[in-house]
Structures are given as C-alpha cells and as structure tokens.
Length: 249
Image (cartoon, rainbow, N blue to C red; front, side, top):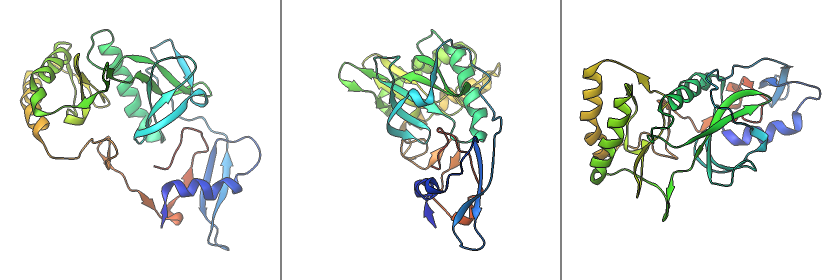
C-alpha cells in the first residue's frame, strides 16, 4: 500500500517526454514498479456553467492550506484579498463543480454565500472557481453551533425565497461572522417548487446544528457524499491525468 501523495513523487522521474496531458499508469510486470504504459493528448470535460467574466489560470494561483480535497486557501496577483479556490481534482467531479457554479449564479447578489470571484481555468477549460474567504474584523469565520439557529434560519430563508434547496445543510456548511451566517458548498443545491421539501430542510436545520457527526468537517473523510480512501495500492492506480490540478487525495 502507498500513501496517495507518495505516488506523485514516485512518478515524477518516470514522466515521458513529449506533449501529453493523460497518462495510463500500471505496474510494470517485470519490475513490479509503477510505469507509464500509455500517454496521449486528450480533451477533458470542462465546467460549462462559466457565467462569470473573470478567469484565473490554475498555475497563476499560489495554493495555501488545504481545507478539503480540492479546496484550498489561495492567493494570486489579480486579487488583494484572501481567497478560497475550489476545483475538480478528477473528471467525475466536473459535474458537481458545474452544479455549484450554476448555484452561485442563482444566488449572485443576494448575500447568501461567499462572493463568487471568477472561474479557475486550466489551459482555457474551466475546472473550478474562486470565492472570497469568509472573514470578519476579528479573523476567520467559525462553523455554526446551536446558538446560531436564528441567523442560520435567516440565511436559509433567503435561499428558500429564491426557490432553491441547499441539499447538504450541515453545521460545517454554515460559516458565522459578526455579520451573520454564510452558507457554503452548493454542489447539491437545486431549484424546486416542492413546499414539503423546503419545510423538511427548515425542520432539519436545528438537528444538523446539534449533530455530533463529522460529515462535512474540513479535514474529515467526506467529499460530496463519497468516503475518501487515504491509502491506495500501487497496482490499483490505473490512470493518472497529467494535469496540474489533478491530485491523488
């Protein structure tokens, strides 16, 4: 077994020459070590909900601490304020990223979520987005607690007023500052006209704030409803996309 990030170190000396952005990696039958069995130039999926005019290339970002897989503190020369970068590490995450960019367009200007600052691109294709880091005059925001029920209910009511269900409303997806509650993680948000669904989400809010579950906790083992496996077997790593935003988390 091998700790995920170690795989990148193992593969760096083996990188084939030429122009390519996709590498097929498996175990060399003769040496038992990982090797590139195939490389190619491919067109990868991109986020289609690219509504914001600002674009920032991934390689122009300076990534800081990891908040979640694919979610980092970031800085870049285009902005003077602290940023959070969220991007797809794997192709199957593009759909979630597309849904979340769409949701941010729905809530633009309504002070429900962090300010959406632009799209992250990789050689032109959109793979994620930049948002403001939610802070107040005393520093970073904190996660919601049961004592924040009133301000959290107000933020949720604004979202519901636009006909949008959040879909994943746990205490780690609500940030509290001296200005109130800010909702985050809209990857499962959807528009709805089902009054009973809105009522269920309202009723579940207090239980979520009181929950002891670690689901959704930054640094936890959950991402978009999938359990993260921290260790992978070398002979099970069959494909690695040679792209700066692609990581083995």
